[in-house]
Length: 325
Image 1 (cartoon, rainbow, N blue to C red):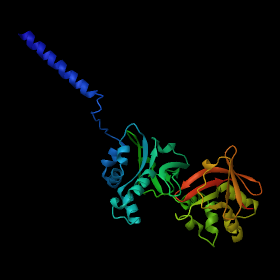
Image 2 (spheres, rainbow, N blue to C red):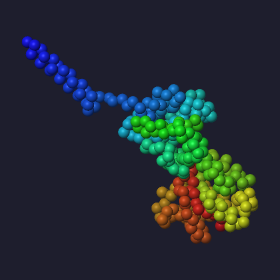
Image 3 (tube, rainbow, N blue to C red):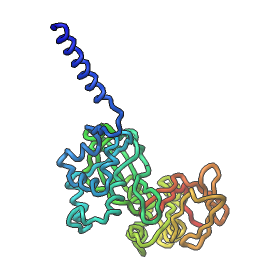
Image 4 (cartoon, rainbow, N blue to C red):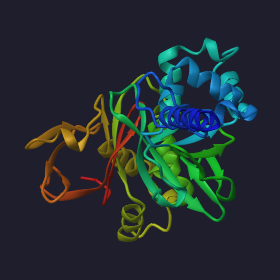
């Protein structure tokens, strides 16, 4: 009798252990495993990101940031940053923002893949947001200086507070909501790095406020932005100590040769040659030859050194010399 009772106990223990093991390793699609520390769960459980959590939920991006098999890096605006954005846009709350617009803003804050801040370049990258000028992905400028990481010279991540590692990527806190960048925004990024920038040329011209014009989303432009080295070379070749020494008529000629209206001209649209007309009436030919090039009317060739800096109202092609025919 005792032997039978012992045997029964052993059988029950075996059955219990078998059930426990099978439940823990089941591949049944009906079993839902809830991730503990995804980007979405971190945001949802942090009261400092409650507005962001609501926005992600409203756009269904919360589910994207809850998938452990897809890695992302997010620049997460805190409540103060998000509320400042709503106030600037005259929205009472997050539900007032048109859904498509809200989703696009949020996508601009998200990078595909898990990247630490040290892996981002000092330069331009692509975002997941799109612009009004086309359905092309918007660019984003990143740079590290001292103890901070900057986005479009607009938002800052303190390095010691960034790179929060989660199950499906990294989260970086920011206290400024990222606006969708205009052409002017990107031109001013370079001006903050040097006073010999193309933005400084535009600012020095007194007859038109080109930086204000290129902020507007009403008209699409392609801008041939002379690099800082190109501006410095032009000043030296013409014996100018600074941009302010360039006569206004000469500034106008330079600007008109670098502005292509009504075009969102990207180098990936070049098949053989692509012919366009600048604001000055000059005809330029874009072509590929060991990288994107431009042939001027006098048959000189200039090189596009940084292509396809995409803004909401057009695109910037950074070139290696100033055009003045």
